[in-house]
Length: 384
Image (cartoon, rainbow, N blue to C red):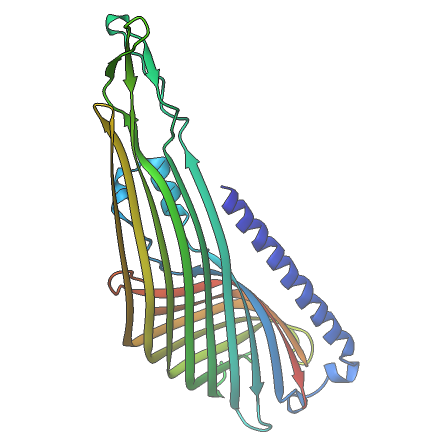
């Protein structure tokens, strides 16, 4: 619950900052635009647009967690602690920029765009039971001697980092929105997209999932020749570590459709418009994964007051590289306020990359990489 509250607070702070910055830039653009500029003809509109923005992204980062055999021995609260401590962050902050060139007296559009997002988080979860109850031996009224109280526990610490990077170069043509009229724009573009995804994680786990008392063992003392019953505890303690690095990249052809339909305002002045777009790409690239994990265990129990112990250690390291075809689809929808030389946009955007990463540990496991969420951008026009 506390994580959800923190995420909601972070989202509100992010959106408030975006709205404040974009509103301020839009107001500045409106002030700088003279009355003559507001009445400029289409041929006097800017030929170069610079766009800057940000996005609060929900990131679906697949991550195969370490699941050693001692997880099967843990009670649910201990198991949940060990599993949840390995979960990656669900949100990241993204930024993007774009330069668009519209040559005078043509319907052609040239653009270069970049998007970048990253997240980094650390987790530390701990759970322990109240301890073993006191054990009484009522047979023959023999006194009971108990060892110091021990506890079941689970402790997990992890660090996770993720980043994604997109680069687009496109050439398009404005074919218009004749069906809707009102001076709408409809740009169909083809080009090249490059995508890169990187993540790393480290986790350290400690647990005592096995704990109990053995049967009572009776001993005769030298004092008054009385008998004592001693309940020895038995237990097993484990530790595990895992480290992973994953990197995927690809480049390939892309196609997109971006459209804007004015819904209010004047063609020469302030206009409110509904914007949408679709993107598709086929990326040819590689997936690289390197990971290593270690598990150790130690157990102790008593037989006839003689302590017996057992221990084990297991580890594995893997490195994999595979060439892949990564299909990609995406889209956005939003609203914008347009001035002759400025634009402010708010909306929701998502990108989905299929089989983009190897999320496995001991074996390859192809998984999708998706990021989506609300965005805000400010565009400033130059030239004209």
